[in-house]
Length: 459
Image 1 (cartoon, rainbow, N blue to C red):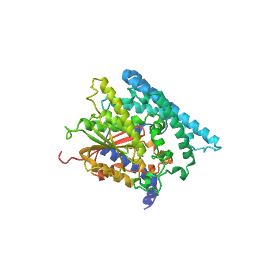
Image 2: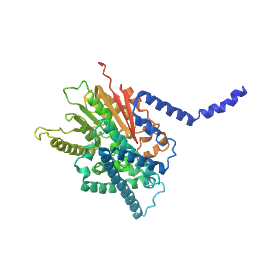
Image 3: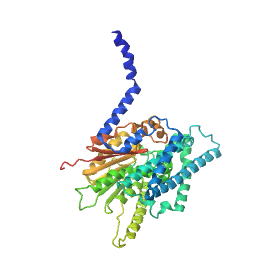
C-alpha cells in the first residue's frame, strides 16, 4: 500500500496537462506520417533548429552553405539563385522602408510606440538572419523540384514582364509603404474599430458571411478594397522576404503529377478549380505547368481580388504567347483561353457535382472557423470527379515545426481571428469525413501542402 501511495505523485506528474499535450501532439504527428506519403522536406523542417538553440551564426552558416551549393552547381542554378536573391533584396528594402515610415508616422502623430510593437519585433537581432536563412533554404528546395522535373522554372523570372520593370517595382514599393503605415499603426493600436471594414451587419446582400467582415491582417478594408488587392502580393512577399512564391509552388507537385498521369481524361481538357484564388498568382504558375488547353476556374468572395486575378491571368497569357511565338508557334493558330472567375463562397460553390478534375485551395483554412472548414471540404469533395484530386495549401500547424509551437499563436495578433484554432485543428478528419483519401504531404518553411484523392470505385 505504501508503494502504491508513493507512486501516485509520479503518475500525476507524468499525466499532467503538459505531458498529455506533448503525447497528443506526438500521436497526431505519428498518425499524419502514417496517413500521408511525406517527402523529405517534412522531416527537414521538423528537425530545423528543433532544440531552439540556433544563434545568429548558425543562420549565417546555413545561408553560406546554400549559397556555396548553388555556386557549385553554376549555370541555371546560379542564375536562379541570383535572381531570387535580388528579389529578396527588393522585399527586404520594402520591409525597412515600411517599418521606418511607420515609426516616423507614429512620432509625427505624437504617439509613443509600444515596446512590443510588431515593427519592433520584426527588427529584433535574430529575426532577419533567420528569415533570410529560411528563404535561402526554401529557394533551394524549390530549385530541387525544378531539377527533378516536378514543375517548371517560374515563368516571370526568365521572361520580359512587368515583375522585372523598375517602374512597376517602384509603384509597388510606394503602395506598400502607404499600406504598411496604416497596417502597422492599426496593429499597434489593436482597437476593435481598426478591425472593421465597410461590410457591416446591415449589408443588404447575403453574399458575405460574418467571419468575412473583418480587416484581416489589419490591411485596408480586409479583402474588400482595390488598394488591398493591388498591394497584396508585394505585402505577403515582403512579410516572407520573397519566399511566398516558392512556398505556394509546393501545391504544383501533386497537381502536375496528377496531370501527367491522368487516365480518364484523355481526349478532353483538364478542368481545374481554385478556391479562394485571391489575386490569382498561384493560378498563373499552375496554368504555366499544365496543358495549355486546361480550363481554369477561380473562386473568391472579393470582387476586388477577382479583378486583380483577371489582370494577372491576362498578363500571364501575354507572356506565354510571346514564349510560344518565339518557339515557332504561328500567331494566328495559337490561342490560350482566359480563366473563368466567379464570386462565391467556398462553402457554397455554384457548380455541379463532379465538375472538376482537381480542386486547389490556397491559404483559406486559417481564415475561416472550424465548422466552415468542414463545409468547404465537403464542397470541394462534391465538385471533384471520382479519381480526381483535392489539394490544400496553407500555413503549417503545431507539431509540423515543434520549435515554433509556443510562438505560433502570435500571428493571430495580426487580426487573424481563427488562426489559433486552425493550428490546433486536425485537418485530415475534415477530408476523410468528406470521403477523400490522404495521399501526400510536403512542407516548405511556413507552408504545407496536403493532397487527397477522391476514390474511383471503378479502379
